[in-house]
Image (cartoon, rainbow, N blue to C red; front, side, top):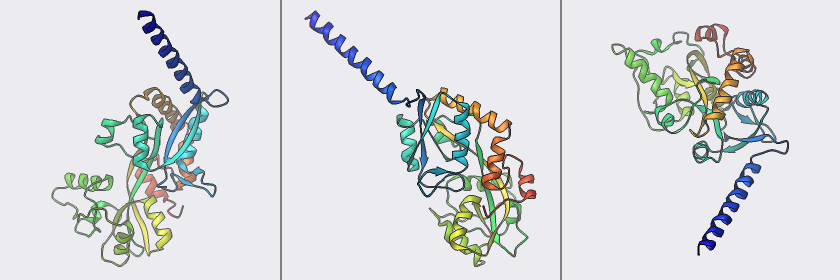
Length: 282
C-alpha cells in the first residue's frame, strides 16, 4: 500500500511539474520574452484610446505603453479588448496582468487592486458653456447659476461635492439624477436651460462631433490623475512599469505624447493649460 501511495504522489508531482512548465511556456513569446496581457476597454475614449480601421488600438494610452515596453526588454505587451468591468474581474482573477483605461483612484478599487505610485496622464475636467458667454470660467462663477442634472455618484460629482465642502457659505446648486445623459445635458446648455455643464473634455469633444452644438469649453477646472490597475499579486510588474513611467515623465516623453494627442502638455499646471489654450478640436 505504501508503494502504491508513493507512486501516486510521484505521478502527481510529475504532472504538476509538467503543468507548471506548460503554463510558463504559454507566457513566453517566440523570442523568449515574457508576455504581459493588458486589458483595454472597448468603451473607447479618444484620444486616450480608440481603434483604427483595422481594429488595432491607438491613442495616448497605447503610445505610452509602447514607450514603457521599450524600457522593459524582457517583456512583450499583448492587448486584449474587453468591457471595463469584465477587464477588472480578469485582472483580479489573473486572466490579465493589468488593465489600462480612464482609471481614477477611489477607496473601493484601492482595497481590491494595486495602483502604481505615479500616474501616466491626466483627465481634464471642464465647464462647457454657449459660445457667446464669457462670464463662466471657474466653479466660483457657477455659484447661483444652474447646472444640468448630475449623477449622485462618480468622479465628477465628487469634485463638485468637494467644492461645496470647501465653500459652505456659497455652495453650488446641484440637481441629482441617476445616469443622466451627457448629450441631453449639453443640449440643455445649448438651449439656455442651464448655464454650464461640468464634463470631461474628451467626453465633450466626442459628443460635439456628433451634435455640433453652439458650445465651447470655457475653462479647465481640474487635472485628475489616471493610472494602470494591477492585481495585488502583480507587485513586481507594477513596480517595474512605475519606474519606467517616472523616467518617461522626467525625460519629457510623456509631455510630448500629451501635446501630440491633446494639443497641450497636461503635465503642466492648470494656469499654463488655460493660458496656452487647449486644442479642443483634437
